[in-house]
Length: 179
Image (cartoon, rainbow, N blue to C red; front, side, top):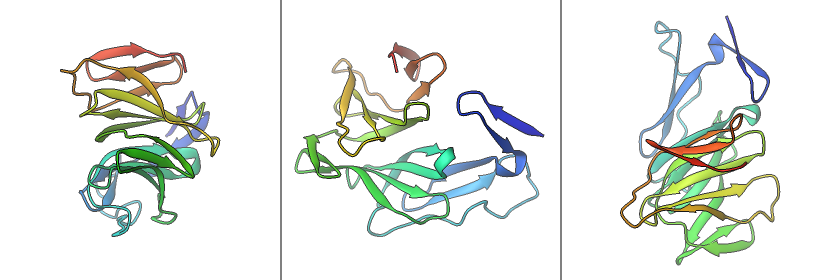
């Protein structure tokens, strides 16, 4: 059986279908459709330097890359499915955020992450600042952009991006964003 992703136009076999999840200090994976296969599709991913409390996870399947937030470090990181290539995408330092060599305002506690493959953009929620932010990963000069500033009582956690219909959703509320 082959599954087709209409947005990215790539084929995924049942063998390639897997679930990744955080175990705080490591990221693990399991097969989705083969309950008899107890071997993980990928080895556990961990790094004492980059991973202290991984919360949000999302993937760029075409590049075999995982993005994860670390709320203790205040960063968004990336790593390949095989556990190599750990790197920082956005990092909070002294209430500012550093991306490559550029400095941006602090982003707060990142809990929800969503990768949008058509435009190569990473979206995230900030629970304590009630923000939805994004960064375009295509260029090293990309800036962190605040997409939506929610009300002071809002506590956004999860986030979903639909490239086909051009919207961002957080939980029960949908926010129309032209991406």
